[in-house]
Image (cartoon, rainbow, N blue to C red; front, side, top):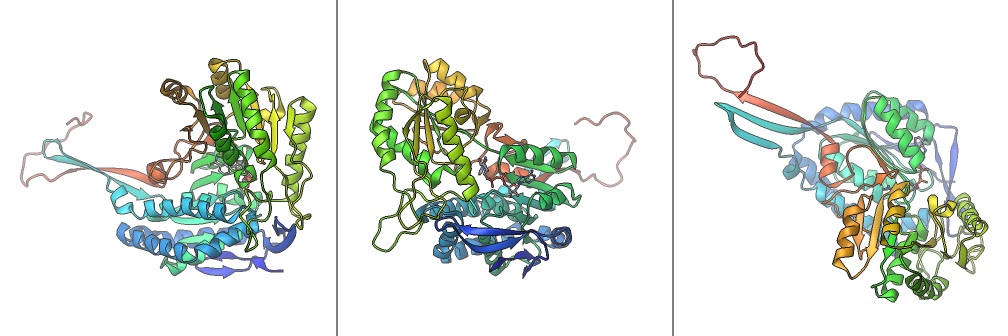
Length: 502
Ligand code: NAD
């Protein structure tokens, strides 16, 4: 069985760890590889080499650092097809979706290529008589990224391109269910000219993460995963003196106003709820209406569309059209999603379309589940309160606009929210008042572009700064402000004991 290796100091190295995790092709349900959890000594070795590589990389001019990333961008484009296939093989998402995730990662690389401009700092001439002030943004040192299974390329690329461009060194700890892509990224960075030790990958589980959270040489942690883990990582990392940005779970709401084109809105909800089998933190698993007539029309429009969803392997046979979505990541996750649907039925929601126990022909062992649609979901139900992370869409019937705003804002998560309407006033009111970090107006998945920032509110994110964009540059640098005077020689000088004022 092929073992996925660590990448430390520019070399592929086999871990000596005893714990082994199986990697499946979720479409066939067959094990294809395995990965070893790293030993403490291996994690510490990665920290050691990243620490050693830091001074030289930090002193490399931003322009030269950007050129390495520019070359990396070219190599990503050269190997596009094989990278996308690898994502599909281990994660299960359909090929075009793997390309979409790669594109979103590539855009952050492109943003990071502009780092000489982004690191220019500020300058005040004559802040006092003969005194100038300038600020610079200097790198932090060794930074760590701990990432989830659902975006094996994009989420790491939210982090390391900016961290490296700013002059930091980096250790990536990817999810253990689909870890191979991280090694391909490390190899491409090396081929692009990144010096050894600047980017390292260690595989592992919580035990390995604990070492990184407490290790004094690690200066910053970027985390993306479940909320329980994000909250924990933020707490412990902060206690150990690190900068931490920790993004957690989500339950995004789409408010459907009575004035919309129902068919077009149903299509928008369909892609956002069922794309990637619902395994997206910016998926839209809850649609809220404010009157029964709109709800009835929406359910009538959605029912045949959900029944007609096509799911199967992420790479179609040559003559076939691509599927709408692929399998879930593991059998265990499939069991969890199935239990949530059971729970929804038990709680009294109306099951309009049932996706349970349906497998595409020839893929009976794969971790598949069909699209599920619930109507009459209410606030007290577990299927409303918790993140399901599967292809399940629920309709909540609010009493009116105020009631809809209240329930959306009362929800524990606030990653994204969207409104579907033709009314500028309703859209403006919604955008202003909604308690979520990313808002869409007639945009079902409002993931900001690389030159803006990504981050949720409430239980969806912990830490002051968002990921990528200008916040990414702030997160991966510390500011230094220099106040300068060049006095003429032989002037009369006097000691001053009061607070200097200009
Ligand atoms: P997960 O929390 O199980 O694992 C994510 C990472 O966290 C892994 O690398 C894992 O090793 C590590 N981890 C898990 N528990 C930990 C702990 N107690 N201490 C330290 N590290 C720990 O999440 P997952 O199942 O891989 O990913 C799915 C979750 O990620 C969903 O909840 C989804 O909403 C969330 N997610 C959020 C965003 C966002 O931007 N907010 C983006 C993608 C995914």
